[in-house]
Image (cartoon, rainbow, N blue to C red; front, top):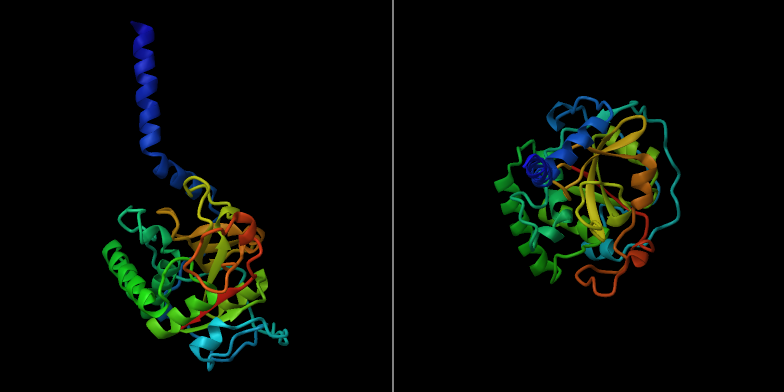
Length: 281
């Protein structure tokens, strides 16, 4: 009888741990998270109007079609005269791409949309509830289907089109994907959206193998880590990746356009170009 009760107790504990595995992963992530700088609202920052030339930007004056077809031009001179704080953190509101924990379509394919919605809410100063995210994803997906004919696996260039035409934000592509470049943009109170080979990202909160293709928002940094809003999990607020881990995962969708993941493998994802999307108001 005693042995039977012990087995029952162990089973109950195991069941409890299984049912609460998401919360446990979140707790472990919080424990491991380095001390983060206090987050700064966009309304509180002083935007530096002096333009800082980065390597290989896409000109804001280009048309949408030009952006989609853009290829990396020759490297432009760098300007590293800007003072970059040791740590910085922008108060980007967070909701996951499955705001009500429904990971069916379109939500399982909505990391690009969720990243842009979070960026838009940061610059507008609006809050972002689960209901707001849900509604905003559905509206943006409908717009993409009208504009592109699809919404799945949109490329970095297509996300630039969405940022400009749907949200009215400034956006460009930069092919100089380094820790210093990203930190310079964040220190200018701009956001960086990263396209990534999702299964290379070391995020223990992903289920299964993780997403083949993923996007997330870089909102800040410490001396050793990037601070992100990763919409791929409910524990994605201020999720941190080391500089090397994040940059190693940066890969654009390896086809000219999104909408067709048939035949795209993990190896194909690693051939995607190193590029990031810089977003500003």
